[in-house]
Image (cartoon, rainbow, N blue to C red; front, side):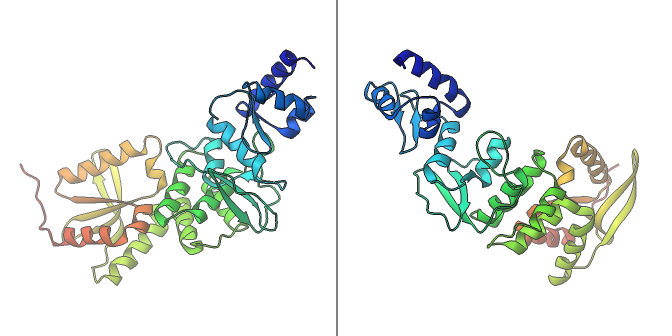
Length: 308
């Protein structure tokens, strides 16, 4: 095979994998080890490990680094997982430069620079995506990302963002969590999943009332109905003696036009002398003490009357 022909063939194949090819893929194209060594020696191609060859001499793209992580880790079925699999699926505005991959725990694997290797007990029968770079499906990836996260805050954030960006649904996460159990923060992840799935109107209000009782705060009335400028307003919790309102926002409050509708309703309350505190449900899990301190401060404030 002539040099020009083999380079064109390799470039065409590498278009789908970020400019890199595995040794097996190159062999499948008819290129021998001597062909590869010749291109590398000429400075046109570069090796990036034992299995990965870039058919150019520049830096690896993010996509190429992900393929490299899968090929270089070892002969077992390695897949992008956690945050990296979510990023491939379309997760935005979540920064994590490491490439996360998972592999069955009994496999012998190599550690690759820039790659975070996670050993798992088993794979679910349907957890891998069939096309493109080997990776787990969003529901599986989100749960593992939460279990592997550095903190509860990071775990809650990745679960919430995955649902908000419509990479998966709350029900898919709940169904998957019944089959996929992590070693760390199982209880916390389970509560966050229920918060995301049920929203503030159910679980959040009950938990909030319990939190108030634990701290010796008076228990509020729940689902109070008030008349607003455009009809009825349903308040999550309210203390009638001081006109303090707390709105517990579930994930659904961040979607579409719901934010505008909520703001109009709560502004109307504020103009009539109500004090309105907003608490997002995931934030309540992460910053319970800080939010309850604000509630306690609000309960001590005198009732504000609308100026005429």
